[in-house]
Image (cartoon, rainbow, N blue to C red):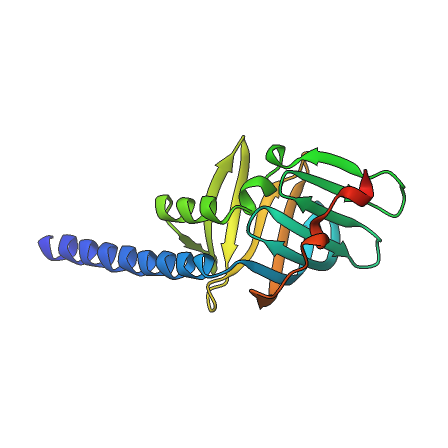
Length: 183
């Protein structure tokens, strides 16, 4: 009986240490990343969308969707979504969306420090909550970079976004995040 208890405790400490090391490596990657350029696949309920994004970790993102003429841009305070079906974009306060925390590197790092990284069904993730948004943030097991997220959008749809990072820390033109042309 004692042997079994010691074995269980030993396994627990080794597993905890392994996940702690993973969290430290992910945190280091985040600390050293100012921006990502990536391709994405987004599943909203049964609808699949793809495209390319540039994410800057001061709450800015610019995404162009393939074949839809749709764009999503955040300047760090506001976010717009514009489709080719309308000349008028939809404006939202960034702080009212899950992007407010997903695009905030310091927040993600703090959440990684406080929450245990989970490894279930061959997925590495941390679960966070912001204003009743349940956000599951995924990380690539090999490179330990951001891999995607699962959340509920402002229309109460289930959204899963998987990203494939193409480059890290490129020189980015700040005009890419300007919303002036949409006012």
